[in-house]
Length: 143
Image (cartoon, rainbow, N blue to C red; front, side, top):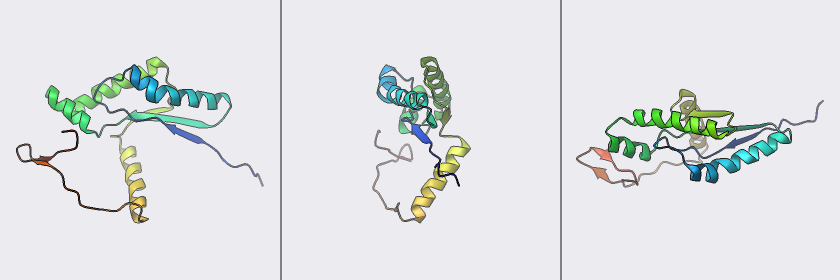
């Protein structure tokens, strides 16, 4: 019997909101350090997967869409592609740069949170939240 154990490292960098272009501060602060780490592990011959993608479910997207008078999807599609291309042009070594709107992401996230809920790790609770009567919507913290 082989006593070797399977070992793979998963690295994920912070998912940028798809509400604007990434800039040098993003690259230097969140993505370059992770990329350097991944490249180092690969040079050592280690099995490593590096993933990232656009966070398409954030209030910053809604705010940008409202400011521009377009739908959130227009903003998301524009900046997902722009940022994906910027990462590629900068030479980031992502194995997968994805989107949180993909069905696979929804399925995986639902399975993850349902398992945590069923195991008693997550609890439901009621929260007070501001509501805009005119807009007929609850107001997230950034409003």
